[in-house]
Image (cartoon, rainbow, N blue to C red; front, top):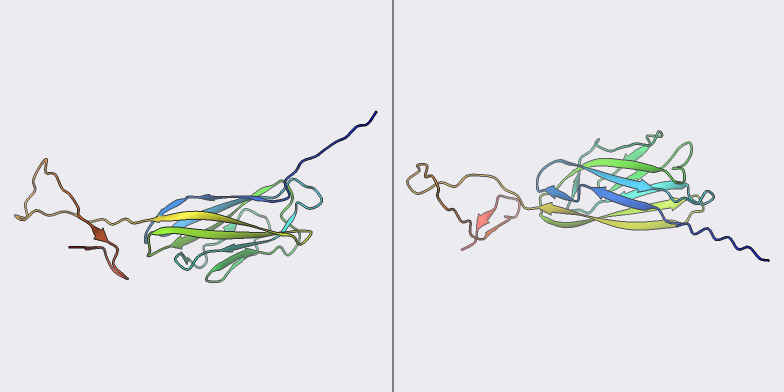
Length: 168
């Protein structure tokens, strides 16, 4: 008579990002939610490092976390949490929040590295998409209002360090 017991537990953390779409030039709060592994021995996270691409501009002073230890630092492209009195406990979820803005539309990868108590580091890549958005108005040739008018916008492109412009 033999009894075999298997506990299948992921050794890696999980991470999610919200929102996944932001508008160009709008100051937006990013929330990265991280769940530490269930493994009691190895599950505690001892360092979180978030790398933002150069296309996203970090808003200084906007970083915060739901952890009780608020040591959450930043530089221009890195945001990190390095506990001074304990670790991010196993099987818990915490949020890391910060604001960004971007001048360029497109997809951007945010890289999260988390170090466990056994010094193993895991990495995740989350994607945020910056939408091309502009506002304005359409004026007819007479300058007056026209009701039920059909308006089409033809091939506008993002200008370098400037507003959108029409391509002829």
